[in-house]
Length: 212
Image (cartoon, rainbow, N blue to C red):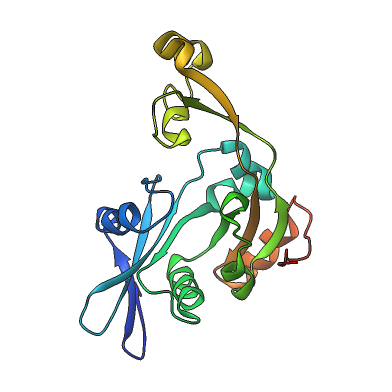
């Protein structure tokens, strides 16, 4: 079943391109991630009130690192959650409904410390907290306000990637430390899958971060 209803709210699979306007206009990142599956939250008048998108993580190391090689293919990143009106419990309902439709998966998602996000919605939906992401350096350009990830995506996977960036941009290229993110993981699908996959979790489970 590709659709779930609650009262006058409907959650259903949508074409990823249908999510673009909300992601550009409302989400703080203002850029489109790699989306393989997208869900829409619709009101009683069939107006799109929110989108929740999933994609294969860019890092194959992350895919393998969560539960090992055998489970890498099940890893999906919840990479965007965007609501026009963030009413009480709406975000947690939306995520839960979307995950019920996805089947057997290992979901990873991040809350950005640079945005003062703690991942409250992931805590409300019983994700496992596995601490902060590792420190990482991004590349940025003087005089270019594109998101750093957009610049970093150039030549991704190619040999001598850094040299190619330097050849293309010269002195405009500089490095910036990426903000660390709270990392959350959720096992979804049938009970047997969740139980066996969870036993293979490589990350240490930690207590949820809270506002001081």
